[in-house]
Amino acid sequence: MTTKRSRVLLLVCSSRPGALGPAVGRWLADTLAPRADLLDVDLVPVAIGDLHLPFLDEEEHPSTGIHHHEHTRRWSSLVEGADGFVFVTPEYNYGMPATLKNALDYLGPEWAWKPAGFVSYGHTSAGTRAVQHAKQVVTTLRLVPLGSTVALRIADAMREDRFAPAARHAEAAEGLLEELVRVSRALAPLRERAHVDASPGPLPGSYTRRLGPDDAPEVTVLQRCCWVEEALANDTLAIPALHESPEDVRAWLNDWHTTGLWRDGRLLGMVRTRRTGADLHIGRLAVAPDLWGLGVGRWLLRRAEAAGEGCRRIILSTGAASHRNLTLYQQQGYAPLADAQDDGVVGLAKAVPA
Image 1 (tube, helix red, strand yellow):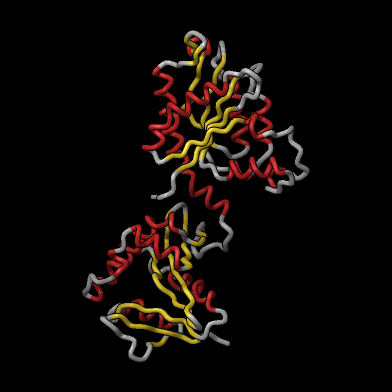
Image 2 (cartoon, helix red, strand yellow):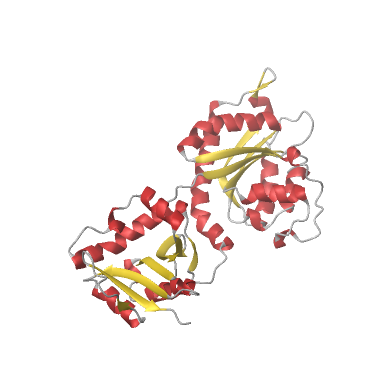
């Protein structure tokens, strides 16, 4: 579940003057454009020759992610922002072009846990030996090569000096893109886990990160799972979290600082905070029902309270008949606010130590 479109680089690898690569790249982009729209994919054609990368000239090891030269930083930004790659490559002497090897060697973490598809072209082998050579390298970078490929024999693909592959090649290209998108989405939790800058969560393998608008679908589902019991306990369906659409959720994710607890691409819990004057407001504390009783709610509450430094008090609310929630909050030092019950909702607060 995501509202973010995938970004796929179509990388034309040959930089030889008069090479067939640009024509293959144009054919690929035009062929895949309709299917890419259906799959919510942005195709980004890139020619290695246009990157102006000299042979690797960075002093730091690529694994450090430290890049001193502007050409490296531009290349790093392109690769970092991609969700997958299709390499359009010829075969030179049983191998991939030096331009592709050099471009791969420039970077390290930027490649990790992203799918790599290949469209090869050549004479006798249709470029397949270049693909086998490249796969040995890309797996070392934690790229994940696809099983689907497109192999073009130049003699079969030319029509009176015009590059025009057969319909079966277009079908193969569409199949490659479909597989790439499936693999990219399956690998997304690994990519995310590698880039989060946060402390581990309370469960093995869990971690936290701030939630943003693109997380609205996951948040919507979690809310509806968690607030059903609240509705039953309080005998009311008048609970905003049960009725918000993903667009409603996107709107408040822009306004609140919301922490999500994740594991293997699943949103396990969340809590949001916002300061108003000297008060810190905490809301939408939610834990997936199958994890209740494991201390996850307490952990998220403490995490939210940590944002209260410099505040006078912390305020939150729950249903008047939500006895499990009330017990949790009272155990953590919260007390009902005077005259704070309204339409079955109880407000609670606790002072922030000076």
